[in-house]
Figure (cartoon, rainbow, N blue to C red):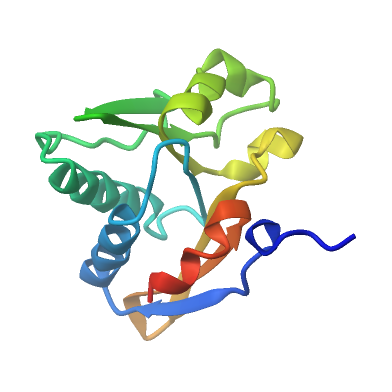
Length: 169
């Protein structure tokens, strides 16, 4: 039996990000099409710009929703989760780097976030089988050794994101 097109994974979309401003533009493009219950995972090594992407995404979504831009969008490395009420939408930003077991995410409220909010997840591999099938995966990597500010972003849409990821570029 063939799966409906909406359930197939999208081909990867690769984007070169020249600097942090380009990362912010990518985040804003995604914020313009995001909906309640969407999940975006952020993958890549320490310092590659996952939290910078999240900050820009949250600011752009706040502008879209005509909500106050949060004065501060800290990395949730130590708190593990930060939440933002942006008008009718909420964003839950998880950093799961320090999680030992996927079940630990339940204590952080991940089930509530997945059911009610837009969810950003750094270090999504820590969720194991709990990672939602319907999601957008973003892998950030360093682009060139001679251009330390440049990044490469690879976007892969799963489920409902498969049809939307093509509209990002």
